[in-house]
Length: 215
Image 1 (cartoon, helix red, strand yellow):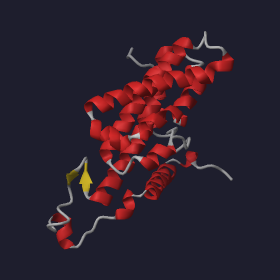
Image 2 (tube, one colour):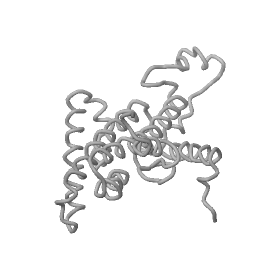
Image 3 (cartoon, helix red, strand yellow):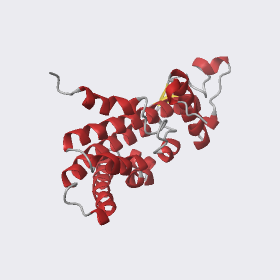
Image 4 (cartoon, one colour):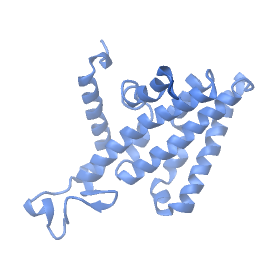
């Protein structure tokens, strides 16, 4: 018998595709629009949410039987705020320039709909192990979309990936720039992130007709 049962595996795999928190549940859109102009920022935000949601779900699950229902939202906010502070301090200590790039958006993890949604919908009703898997699955689903959007926005907007030039030098006109290619500055604007997410949603629904809503 493997480490994960079939149901446990679905907790991780479902949010990666057919129940993705961004493209299906339409949660966490703000950060997808705001910080995906650079692939590095997308990756760091994804890892940050992975840490906060994974451990946050476990903590809420462990406390679920002793949290008074009237103050459960306050308790959830306190837990996620404490985890976000840890992430923020680690970034400032080991990746200060990147922490300045992400700036207020790390703090806004506290209000990320995905995190509060999983606390309410899953962690309060399930054990620590399943809650941990649910947190990992949903944060991975969130991170995959952020990384895809960040990849295309940085590639076509700046001609770089992780800060390294991959299409050539636009000043010296080498690589693709030698044949007249120019970076698309619109890709660095937030509305283009929404368009890229829209394309991902379209591709996803084209491949799986069960995701298309009936009107």
